[in-house]
Length: 558
Image (tube, rainbow, N blue to C red):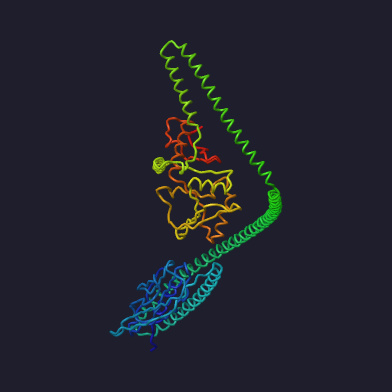
């Protein structure tokens, strides 16, 4: 008797279940276990070894053997997870560019022993461009479509083979004994139900493939539209870039042209200024030579004539001063007569007060006229010891700021005044490291200074105040005239540029100067509410050829 086997039906159901799983069917029926023999588990699927940055990586690991399996991820990149169904997932955020080692282990129990299998591969994560990604998608789509056609053909062959087996089983049913017919009938019934179920599954698979094809077609159309839009955008960007580049080149050319024109204009202007400066320098040089020739040709008679002219001008000035004094006295007399005339007409106390006020003002005018008498620079040789001591102590107490201006003095006359009035003209350094000090004591026949080395150290602080020294070259009117004497001393004594001429006054000099300044302030005051110390400020004075003080300017005066 021919034995009937039912194993093909069970195998076909298992194959169809796996096929439906691969094409995306939500129903997942595990194959029935082989009750006859247990087999060790073994991984039969190949792992995808590439992943794209920014996209999720999924790998469904397939294994053959006796269930149940126990899955375990031994090694992998950060963020990779594996569930107990054999699915490996790496989220899009965790996909990092580079090479990562992945190690998977699956195990089962066979005859009371633990059997396991390990799969190891290297996952390469790439950051591909959009164009390459689109090409890869098209290639993968074609591959999926080919696999789908191959699966469909294989399923049809299985169904036809199953129908032939059912027909053969019906033929053999008549040859079986009555005892086996009932079992065979149940088996045939079960097999027909399986064939029917396979047909339903095949129909469902066809519908899914149809939907998948429509979806792929729609995706292809959308991809084509996106590609056209991308090309259009690229053309538009290229056009805009070309226009911007042309505009930039045009602007650069205009700016370059304007810059060249401006540089040429500046060059011509600079050349013109250089020529003018050269002509001006040449003119100054010729004028200087002419002036030197004129000074050399000047005779002693002309010098005497100039001196006589200066004396005549001085006499005229004195006559004018005398005339001004007489005019002031005359006006004073007229004011006095006017005061007497008004006093006679006053009948009440108010008019008497007005007359007293006029008399007081007249007295102030008289006092001011008396104070306008000239103040001579004091001479130590003409002062008694008591007068000298008194003036010297008063000069130490003077706190006002005084500035000295000297004009129309030759250097020789200036040195003579310094010598006759016991001033000190020193040639010293501003640097503390230079200890040598020189004193100008006279001038030679050419008018240049004659010096002596000071060996006594600092000035006598009982007579001089070293903090009130004046730099000679800073005297405004004669700065550029006297600078040559300072240069002469530097060269002769072989000193550096820190050495300068300094002028020091004795204390009694400042006492007389302070009295003269206070008298001038009282005679020319603007605001009587301000005292001399608060209102005078910096006092500018000079010394005349007659050795008289002359106040040039101070604040709060007319």
